[in-house]
Amino acid sequence: MKSRTIIFVIGGPGAGKSTHCANIARKFQYTHISVRNILIAERKKPSSVYSPMIDFCMRYGRDVPAYITVQIILQAIRKAPSSRFVIDDYPRNEDDVQIWHRELGIAEDFTRLLFVFYLSCPEIICVHRCLRRTRRGRKPPDHSEITAIKKRFSAFREDSMAVIDFYKTVHLLKKIDASQPKEEVFGDIRSIFHRF
Image 1 (spheres, rainbow, N blue to C red):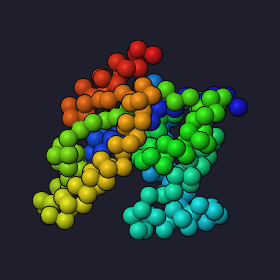
Image 2: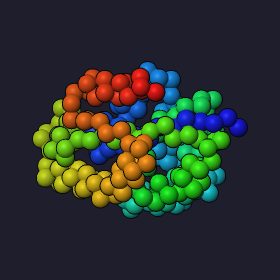
Image 3: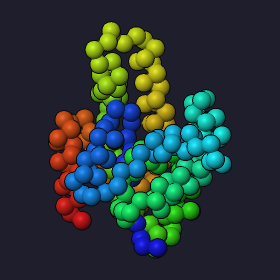
Image 4: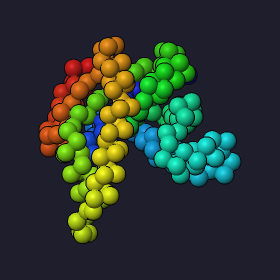
């Protein structure tokens, strides 16, 4: 089995992860894997052994166990004809990091983690972007919507600090100022690619 090159993209809600994963896929010929989308697809499969647990976690707002997430990502990688992948919104917490490196990352003949893009963006900008994306043309947001987004951002901050610190320590973290206009953000991403 040929080695796969992997890039992780992490950041808070509204930081632009999906947008820039799609840009990376298009510009640099990577396959974009959205962890959220592949988990939703797996949840819908009646024959999946993972479906009941994924369904339970999604219904009650819990993280899908790291060992399941890694297996679903692995399935997506094995099915794709590509050897280069950009993985959107992963890893989300320390468990994800540990399981990934235990199950996949250590097997250098299977995967090689090129780097981890951290799209850093202040909470106020992320909240504004999320509201703009979900509200389009509707009445102004109510307090509960703003609170829900802030709660997601707070969860990201709490869960991801260990991820950010770990990849910084091993010199794989590439921090990007995602508060800029998206064209400038992608310009910074492109400049990192051009150095490799």
